[in-house]
Amino acid sequence: MKVLLLKDVKNLGKAGELKEVKDGYGQNFLINKGLAQLATDGVIKQFKAQEKARLEAEREALEALKALAKKLEGVKVTIAKKMGANGSLFGALKKEDVAEALAAQGFSIDKKDIEMDGAIKATGLYEISAKLGHGLHPKFQVEVIGQ
Image (cartoon, rainbow, N blue to C red; front, top):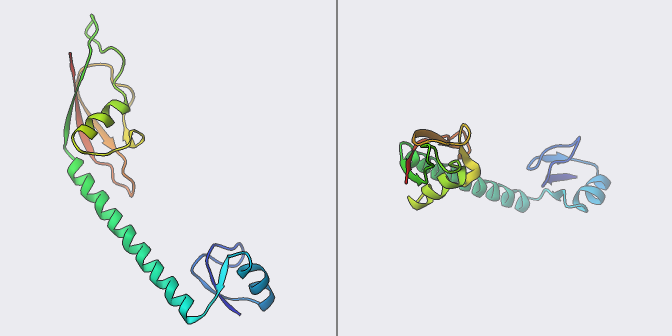
């Protein structure tokens, strides 16, 4: 019996592979548990079409991330924080503050994706990066000014 694996099966193969298995194993275990389907021409064509659509969607998502990285590269964000009497900031500048400032400029970057070398506790110009996935780490500048 020829089956198309829908999920990875230990000691048999990975999802998307065609395998020749014994009738009882294929029918009673693999197909019954939803791990495989009987490999007919229609099932194989449908699987290939779904795989092609998934790869196309993945490619489009990567292109969108590359465009976002290109826009974000070199952006300068200014954040105003309250100053203490000794010239240091009240509290530290956190990833949340940077994410909010980026959102105000039209970039939707999650605070978890912002990489800082620790808390920023003084005014000045800092270079920060964002991890977007797929090896994309655009750098942008944050200027912290006192109020």
